[in-house]
Length: 270
Image (cartoon, rainbow, N blue to C red):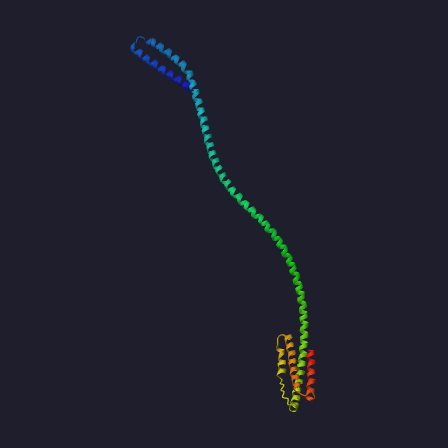
């Protein structure tokens, strides 16, 4: 393509040189104008005959160049598109690298979560065992409570029976205390009658009997029962001491002995 354009340029240069030579010859000799015209005509014919196919070749070459330029422009646009795709791909690669780093972190987190899940499964198994143990303990506690309720019911029945017996014993004790008070009054009268005969000065007051009557106000009935028994024993001891100072053959001693036997019998009954 370059050689053909150069050839056309050389042909034009030759034509210009020939025109210059023709002008010089015209200036030198006007007589040879006819010859010059003939020569010029021939030269023009030759130039025309030689430049026309070359001009056509030049036109073809220019069209080819235009097409090549269009092709080159298309290639440039493709290159630009590829460069954009390459830039986008590089950005994607960078994003993928960032995602890869994040995936590494996520994998580490996932491993930690898996370890936690394994621990949770172990804890759940232990919880199941504890729940089974708890259910067994609840069942045992239910049985123990049932047994305790049964025992409680039995104890309540027993306590109610004992309370009935204690109330009965309290009624008996009140009757016995009343009899004992009457007996002590009789003993006081008897001792007062025979105190001058034997030199005995015994003063039995009713304080012990009043104290024994006050025993009914004690909250614990069993304790009241024991205290009443202790009072009887003290009274019996007092009577025995009085008997020690009286002659065995005295009628006072005989009455006191009979009273002491009565008190011992009452204490045995209680």
